Structure formats: C-alpha cells, structure tokens
Image (cartoon, rainbow, N blue to C red):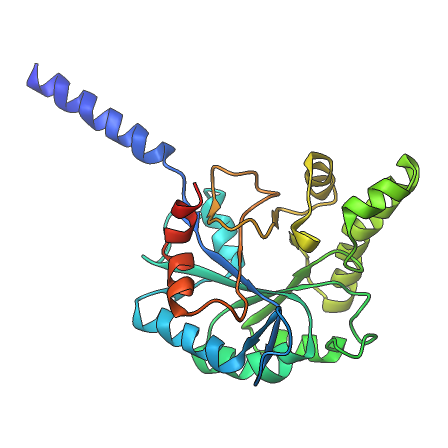
Length: 256
C-alpha cells in the first residue's frame, strides 16, 4: 500500500511540475542619454546601475533565442535567474551610449528594428552600424514592423483589402527586408505601441515569426500565446527598486 501511495504521489508531483508554466522577465528600452530628454530615454548611468545590480544579485542575461527555446520546451534548463534585454526602434544612442556597456558586461541584446528608418532617419542607426553591432556577437537584429505604424488607426481608415495588404507589408515585408540587409533569418517581432489583436497574432504567425512581444507588463510565459509574450518597458521614472520588482516578478504579482 505504501509503495503504491509513493508512486501515486510521485506521479502527481511530476504532473504538477510539468504543468507549471515557465516564466522569464524580458526588459525593453528605447533610448539612452547622458541626460533624460524625453519619457522614453533612460540615463546611460542608470542603465549601467541596472546591469551592475543584475550582476551583483545573481541574474544572468540570456539571449532571446535561448528564452524562446526554453519557453517552447526545446531547452530544458536555464541559469537560476534569467533575464532578457531588448531595445526597440534602432536609435543612434544604442550605438553610442548602450553598446559600450553591453560590451563591458558581455551580455546578449536583441534589437527590434523597423527598416524604413535605418540609414534614412536622422535619429536612427545605419545598416553599417547595425552590422558592426552584430559582428560583436552580442547584438542581434529582429523585427519591429516596416515603419512603426499604429495598427488600430490604420484598420479604421483602410478598407478590408487595403488593411490586409498593409499588415502584410508591415509583418512579412519587414521580415524580408531585414533578412536581406542583415543576412540572417528574422524570427521575432515586437508589436509597435504594444498594439495587437487576434487577427494580427494570426498574421504574424503566418508571416513566419516564431514569437512576438507586447509591452504588457508581465513575464514571458510558456502558458501565454507565443505571439503575445509580455515585456517590461524600462524608462527614466523607474528607480532601482522598481527595476528589481520587474525582474523578480513582484510587479507582475501586484498587477493581478
């Protein structure tokens, strides 16, 4: 009887453990500067303090690729305290302000890029700079649509057929352009303004993306839709305590 009870309890614990969702905090930044010029800019010194905090508190910055593999069940384990760092838009401050710190701490970073701005907009990096960053093996370029649209606004003003073509350009078109320019497969997408709906999630999957990211303030989880994984946007108003609450899951718990 005791033997059968032990087996039963072992099976129950195994099932409970296997059904438990895997979670990873994913952070996203936009611009860096010596001073804060707008709400989306974080002081470079503050970013340096955050990286130092992660290091001192036993966190390991992992690649988005490993995060996907883990959440998808292809990778069985990760370091005890994993965290992912991403940056949206492709502003020049990534190259001038962020990159030296990334190299100093030797951490992987994913850049979500919309190609229309690259080598065109005065605030954006060039294709050469992006390639230089990727050559360090620390940075990796992924998709942030083609030109940073507001999907809600476009859906209201375009016909059904026009909107379908528009979405295809933003999703599939961006993926193809980035692959052409960077010379590697583009598998991940960050939703612009955090806007998404069931139709967009389905179209992203059909366009060939493996995982897509919102700015819903919660950990990425194996129990969530792979096309709508959460991220924490980090801006100047977040002090080190707020940052700590993001990565250790306290902010996520407080929102439920």
